[in-house]
Length: 398
Image 1: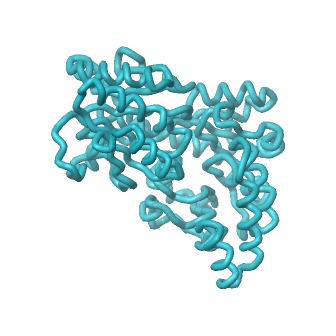
Image 2 (image 1 turned 180 degrees about the vertical axis):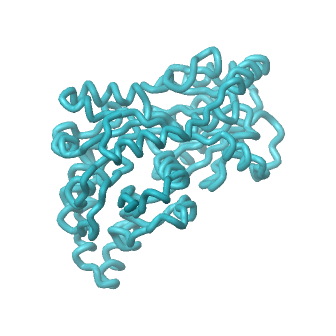
Image 3 (image 1 turned 135 degrees about the vertical axis):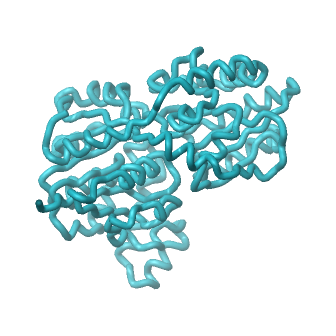
């Protein structure tokens, strides 16, 4: 039987939830029946080493220098013989300076589409694994019988551009998202396309995670009190800035704990300044990127996700597998993941709300044990979700 040719597209493989989800899908994929290419805009990131050997990693759409800040990128691209890409990078910088996420993605793509090369092969299916440029590229630059897109968040909360995205969604055969709430956001925004929208949950392998968690967790500080953990890109979306005043308030009350944050991102300098201004340096520690976060999940006492919005957070799913007491802000999809008061807490998206919930969990060992026991009763493994993707590749409707 002839194998089907499939192309996955993503921007990079940095240590975010989307990237982790993509390498999980690739690790489980059926290579007996599919030939798989992976097209990235930039061949970089912590998870690049986790791409299976059976995947054909294509040359990146942009040279490595494209990722540098504009002052470095512009001249290095020219020196490397890429004057047009250097001009593209300059224009993209101006395009991304202001506006909502959707407005910035729109302006950036309107620049990049003029300089970016089309796919060289024709495919049976192309799968754009995130919103924005990967979907735009799949629709306009790839010849394929079936075109599938993914949006991993709440379309409305993300501030995407409905008018710009409409013709791209019209040309997709299917658009997948990761929770019922996210699908509802798509249904309400694009009611004429509801038949194209499908939920494919983030794929979780509890056995894999628990095996990985057996490695030691090096928190690098010898702290012996209660540990709070967050795994998050250091960005506005993740709401870490909302939680820092809560930490300061609990410090004033004399509570002894430490908040560890795994992740990198554009807000790190601002967050460090805020920590200094609040005088809580000894209460917060950035751990940077970690290719294996599971030992840290296993070792923490509380998992906290103070996000402004999420799709269906993979980090929260993983905290549930590891049966950690969970504290979430009330972002639109929080109740899709935990049942507040039974296996975790959902609190108002304010510093005061976070402080109240975190104090409750820090002081109430019995409640933490109750949440852990409730989580341990469930099996979160769902590797069968990949069958939905195979069906869509084959042109079926779920």
